[in-house]
Length: 301
Image (cartoon, rainbow, N blue to C red):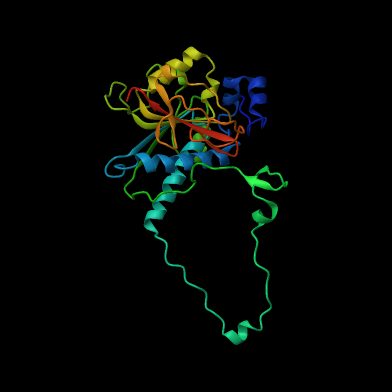
């Protein structure tokens, strides 16, 4: 494609958007785009999926696939996270842990001749865990509401992921070896679906829609409403991943904010009530490495 470049141009996405414009930037990096926040994306996706499976996973795997749309998929960060989580969960099922064997003990007379060694102190304990500094200057870990573990998934579980992005299909294919359909937000808002999906079907097309580092680019409120209203009839859950709290999704746009910890509608619940740091995790938001994940439930399904 003419005008394409290698890499992401500037590491600062604001600079890229300001210099080239959103559409032109993604055209330039269509085959080479990579999200520099991938480690944080992976952590929040894994923590969310484990919580979701705990609350909603019953019945999946018995002839029922977990259907996901990776919307504005970029180079496949969310798809890779979903696949890695699935693989890790199935390994947990097929490889139960075996009892740990104690190492052989030396005879007492040999033990008494060995020099004593100081107890091992993990490196994190010596330099302090990552987090804010306490009164004594030592780092204190930030509170985490959600586990990062992986559940044991049924071997018969089918993870059915379909991706859409109007620009980065080449980068998505290069990284995942999967097809990414070139559908824009406008296409989806107008009812266009990937091949093989019936726009008039009574059942939702997907269990969840994941949108990573993209929905805030839709800055026109009327366009955002049109997209969200249409998607509320296509999936039960909407997962938004971003480095900030944008965009604001109003309750009248087809989706209700979800309390991930209580697994119930958030209602008027604020972010924990008390004042928190911007990267603190709450019951309504999973935060890792400055990446935030929010969850919404469809009001139409």
